[in-house]
Image (cartoon, each protein chain N blue to C red):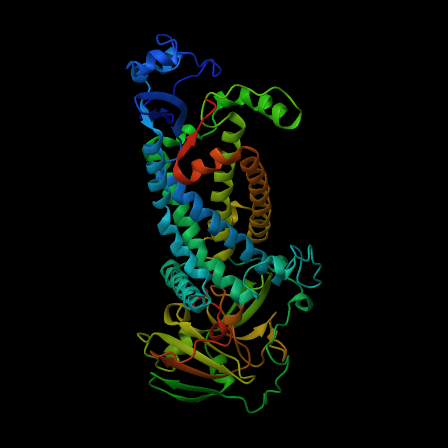
Length: 231
Length: 280
């Protein structure tokens, strides 16, 4: 299911002309989930980093060797107790948003627009070459190019993993099987941390792309409509 | 929804039938004729003002998300976060399984005694008078009063190698020994339909346990670590060992124990904003 594309007309007196096109790319559910998730993820990362500050190591407690001294000013919560309140509150919003988004995408069929499949593999290198190595711009055929599909599919997987690893370290007894699948409590904690950094890398790249691709593209995630799509 | 149309030549804009503007002015309204893109000949058309209206409406539909902004308002932030934590605790209590055992470990996986951290809130050693120590029992029990360590030690001793998880994020596997709290509750004739077991300590620390956790077979009135009586720093003569709870629930230097339905205070850390249930 692709996006609905329409022609935009302008009428001046008796004259009507087509002045452009517009595509309805993002259904309301997707846009709301996107916005709520942007906020939740911001809070989860910020409060997570404050929690990390309480024991910024993945080694023994005695002797303690800190891995990284993350500044308090770049964290949310102010102290461990505060950070946990944010983290344990927003995790429910984060999870609910993810569930709603995934359920919607699957049941509406809208996932086809963004899910990376084997068919998209050949398109990856031309996109990478274009973005990073001054290659020619591949023709846009759909709302999302293969590289975008790869990024947006991967980040969903990361999101799910961030929840699973989080649950494993939040409840290593009640979800001992989950912790076991990850190699144990210490691995689950390290994975949770690492996945956060991967998601941050995605967010950085995503924001750069949003800026590069201009206003019309940006607005499409707010109103659903993208003026003058390239496809 | 229409399938999206391929656009082979985005540069072409000339109209196939109407050549000049004057023809259009004479009444030939080129509405039915789109630009020279045969595939898009039947594409739906929307007036730009209608698109603007639709776009605005779609934007407004995002308005409910503004509700999240309540978390940013100082006046409401504290109570919202408190409610969030309470919800988390409620969910945690639902996730707790009475019969599910916390993982236990082999002796080789236990950290050496010197590497078992000592976390205190006031002093490492509050100077407990071990000679005259008693546990004061009160509340909904048939046999309130003072209990000596020997009475607790007369109950069946359980030794377990379990993981102690600190809220800070570190954990250690230690070896603990003591009497099952459930056995002690039977000894004192506790009303186990009550909601909570609360404890107080000689360093003014205090904690509470939900009854389900208190009755869990791995919840111990712990008087040994590494097969030796508790040292002073580790909570002599008696502490809680609760592998299904976070570290701060496992109070040291116990002096009082009460069975109750009413919680005036939850715990030293909880009353400062930490989770009340914090089962792991």
